[in-house]
Image (cartoon, rainbow, N blue to C red; front, side, top):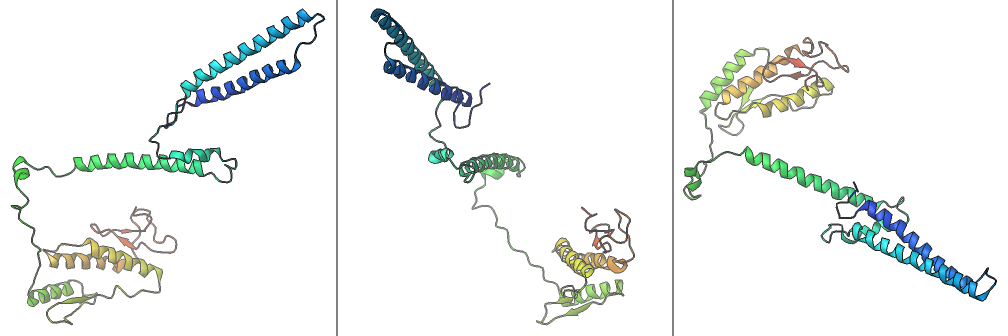
Length: 275
């Protein structure tokens, strides 16, 4: 089956048309050669005339045959689509120094990549729309004006409650130093020195994991649970240099102990083993 470009050009017919053009040029050249040579190689005048006329007619028939073949193939070749996004950039393919400036091939690759990106984006959009929340007919009938606006929620806890929670946590982890400060009045600040950068790579990784844990343990309505969960996770590093990796069973990998602690099970893993 003939290969067809996305722009509507039949490559096989196009190749045959090029061969037909070459055949037509050869036929026309033979016609002019016949006229140039004239009547030769015959002894009598009548014989030379008959031979010249016969040869000239054969050459004209060849020209007519090749021209008809070229017209037939030109109809099969087709033409580029008028709405092709590259427009006149197709002329770049005629550049004789294509090896040095492959601009046209790069444009085609970019165009194909853009089409694939648009196709996959459409598929992704359809899947996301299928997973969207379903609304009932009653909900769809409610106007936007009647829908209650979500009010921002703030959690204000009495200072005594905060002091009690921190005091209990302090008793739970006696080996950890916890200090509560109120530099601006009633707003409490729990002092944990996890921001100063260490000179050792192992503690730098622990600091990065602790920052990740702060983002993981989020429960605005139960702040005491958040603080207690984070402190429990942080306390698991008390055996940083004693616990082996739960995946590979080794104590050291690339010269470092298992620095990652699972948020749920508190098990130790190397960075590469936890993936």
